[in-house]
Length: 321
Ligand code: PBG
Image 1 (cartoon, protein in one colour):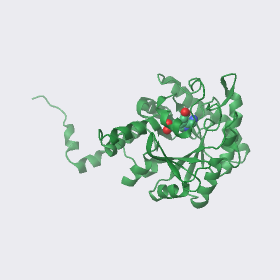
Image 2 (spheres, protein in one colour):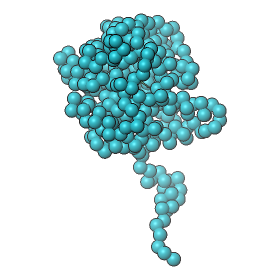
Image 3 (tube, helix red, strand yellow):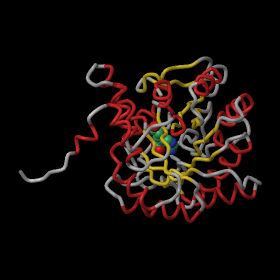
Image 4 (cartoon, protein in one colour):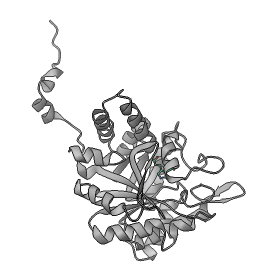
């Protein structure tokens, strides 16, 4: 008989499989998204994201405590302001909702890493991530506002700035803004590879941030492209990014791997709202085993090269580790 390889030797028992497992999910890898809403009393569940809530300033600390108690070391904060205008004032004012929440959280949990999502879309009346003039989202004019937002978030205590507004040059602008304000040591986690994706649907409902007209295709990337992703990463590295992100995750694992092979920066996968909603909907119908599916999805991101994962499943996963 012709000689052949016996791959099954290394799969013969649970202990043997544990011994040769290549990718693992640890609590240290997980970043939990948190929505904070101005003026809200209590908490409200997001209908398309069962188990995910908007918190008011009165309930946020209970949520933060449960996150910290589970051993999760980082959160990413998204704000829902009580006022919107053309320049997104709520994103960068001293008493903005993210700034207030950050001060509150850092007072009780100075060791928890608070990542501030730095964008304007939740705060602009247009729902766009930048400043709009004559129907066009202006690039360079938007940089000024995104930089102001970053500086005010760090002033409030944010540990990492995560700009997601997808304007060209935002990393350079924010780096300069932070340095000039005396925050040379605050890292930037760039949403470097951010596709114009329908997987953000539930988030836009949750954050009330859908564009009032048009779409985000002139600033976010075309899902059909991979080389564009490498160009984005190269630019953000040159501009001084400390982390790079690929978003969404599940339909973009090939891009994750390519980015991994091109950068030595820490790589972040964002397991986005639509990916969460699909799993939850199928699980609620009894069609899939949620825990096993979530593990397979997240371990796939690790295998593709992600170091960190932003996921709405972070608490569920941490509770089982
Ligand atoms: C803000 C932002 C979005 C997400 C994170 N930051 C929405 C968007 O770009 O429209 C999406 C996150 C998710 O879907 O979970 N620009």
